Length: 159
Image 1 (cartoon, rainbow, N blue to C red):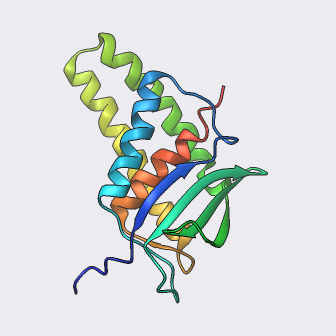
Image 2: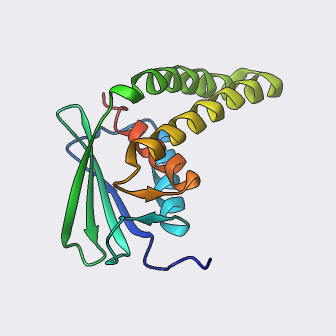
Image 3: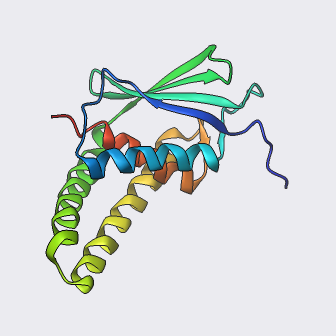
């Protein structure tokens, strides 16, 4: 089946009120994730055919807000997702990322690779959870879910 060109995101932004500035590594990951999403993604809203879409991610009262707009910026809908199911994986991912960023400066390549494997495993787990939690509301592929999780995690880099 051919990919429908309207089932994609053309713009992704993070709600400025929801995020703080991160360290240079974190800022780089945010920028790369947004660029990667816009370059290649699958994003569809079941029952709608008015894509491509723009997405604004933010936090609203400890819930994840998916503000979906048309390419022209007209609001379509907002989905609020509880972050409770993500708490453990976000906490574990933060711990592994801290270890990874510390290790890349001083550890052996084998140690860095082992930490990175754990980081990728948690990232995959979070992406699967995101696909599951959005089921019936938003249709995304696994790679898009991975990149969106990077941005969800970015929303927790406050401070």
